[in-house]
Image 1: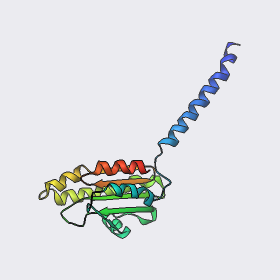
Image 2: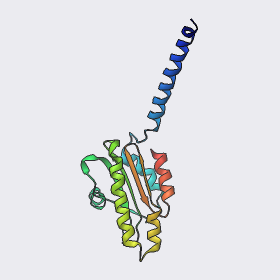
Image 3: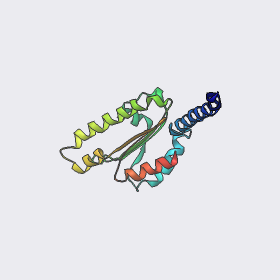
Image 4: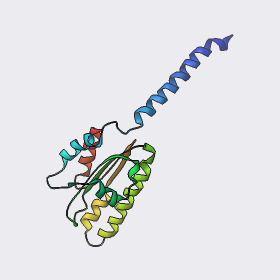
Length: 159
């Protein structure tokens, strides 16, 4: 008889716990429903004057060797000078499961650039070592710049 009195509260506690876990998973999944342009505009507003210029999608695909079929949208900015490694990339993917693949492609580019600049441009090499590569659900953010932290903060707020 004693155990029957506790059965309903125990079931309610388990149901509440499962509901809480599902709610946390939904909140932490990240990503965005916004378009890449909606996310990029506030980030570009934080860029320093003449820091980077907008490049084409083809430039980004060539630089990072991405699979175009997995991309919903992207924004790529880089400096026009070959002696400046400043660049920023925001990619929105069709499927969040592809984020690690894109993060690896970005890391490969950073490694290649580090090997190029390591011996003759230590300031640019240092920027590459401090680059930001973050994934959030279906979006990937990459930035190598003097103010990369400010650009990343603007990106997070824009999501």
